[in-house]
Length: 397
Image 1 (cartoon, helix red, strand yellow):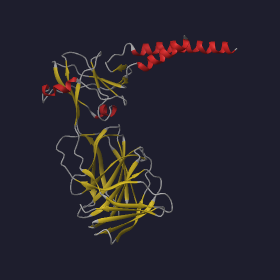
Image 2 (cartoon, helix red, strand yellow; image 1 turned 180 degrees about the vertical axis):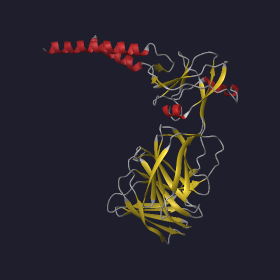
Image 3 (cartoon, helix red, strand yellow; image 1 turned 120 degrees about the horizontal axis):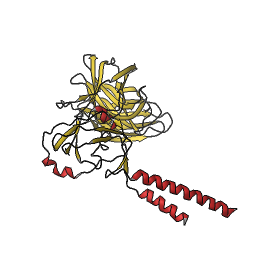
């Protein structure tokens, strides 16, 4: 009988509805009139939310209040274009990759997307107009290791003199060991789009940099893990430049984390790095200088497009915002079927400072019964287990 009761209790616990643990709350200003209101997500609240606002909840104390999200995304500015691989071969002496670049009038860099590796290799690059007769372009390209990141892949940018060959051949020297895992190759095409919509600049951004042979490493540090849409750089010198940059998450000391993408910095237009909706407190920028002098960086800031939600709220009623559940899924509300009923302009509703929140709510907003029930079930389960162990010992004795 005890076994059956224990199994039943375990089954009951596993059958409990999914619930969300929100770690933060803030009180909304009471609406003066019933109607639709906009709530802007400031950087401090945004740092406690998931990047897509999936854990945001509005509660009237008993139930969830439906809302619609409006998350703007800034133009990206750079696009990765894959170069077709004509042929590839590999053995322990070397890996040969031939790329078709006829879609471009000339190249001065090629980016390799590679699986994480902790080794370094040397490579050479040649060019050809017909894919048969080859001419050397660079014979001492250095392929660095990936460092530490959880993305499983990283970008290796190869810089070389501008050339107008139709085909490029990359020879990676394997030194008698297994080859590197090159996933794809391509170029970052800079397609600048002027940003006309407003941005929210984060306060307190700091940076430090270090110039090494052919590269500048810049560590960007924020006070919070803000949702970042762009990293702005104020560059004083040189007068003319065009540099490739890879972006990673990092710690405050510059230890490399997840690879986030790549971009082009150019003196021809506004200098920024696009990172649509990436949440991180710190970033690492690796700027590839080649044989050029390093950039003189005067200032670095991070910014994001405005994020807001809109909801129907009742006059004089109290509401709170809940945030801080990394496992929460975005809610699905009927309100999205009535988007046409929402006015283009709605009054803005403010909220107070963030406070710790310890109440556990299920998806329907109920919290009164859940924890007491779980605790009671665990106590009963503990007592029955203790009795069962004692009964087994008596039988064995």
